[in-house]
Length: 344
Image (cartoon, rainbow, N blue to C red):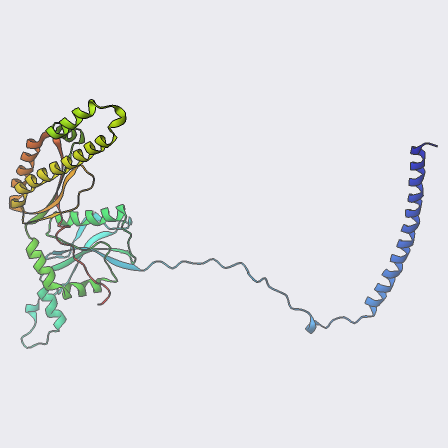
């Protein structure tokens, strides 16, 4: 008998054993099922009051949240003197297209019509004293505006539009009041300060000027200085592995020469333009090529004279200097009205 035959017979014996065991298990299961059915039938039903209540999920689906609209405020751009409330063409801040308009502190009626001896409230007298003082405003969200490029441009362009027809006092960026009533209170409280500043700025404008070296031209000019020419000549006659420190010296010499040229040109420019201005503000130049970053407060009657002086400087320095001349601008660098809107 082969091994394969023994394997088949062994399997047959196992299968026979499994069949008998299965029959016994089926009989046992049948008897257990009958006993369980009998126990269930004899057990009384649970009263309704004892039944477990329906369980709701811990986190039911939330109902949609309705976001309340943001509170509206009044954005203040500048202060002007105007005999009437009016609107302007530039859009307000926030890209909503809000209209620019005036909020006035003046009384709507003439106080001369008040009968002699009649009581007049102090607020009414203050309004009459305001003498046409107005704030140029627009509706806006009651929020802290970010100092982004778009927001700053909207703020400045609004003031520039108003300046076409009025003397302006620029108000600090992102000044928002709760209501027109608050704006009127500000105007009444600050009447003397605002009126004095408006008189001071009347007939004056800001002109901006930046002067920047042409790098190719100025370095070519510096290279012709005798001290630098001598050092460069020595370097050309030395071995390449022995001139490292001499090259560093040359770089420092060029840097100092550039600084001297900047100072010399700035002094000359300021010496010509400063006498033509009432006040001058300079900011720190950015980049090694910038000579001047200045703002000039100029009387309107001297603006043409100032223009001619800048043109003559351009002709004198030629291609050596590039000029960025801007105007007429609101006096941002000379007046920046700061208003507290919280203590009114």
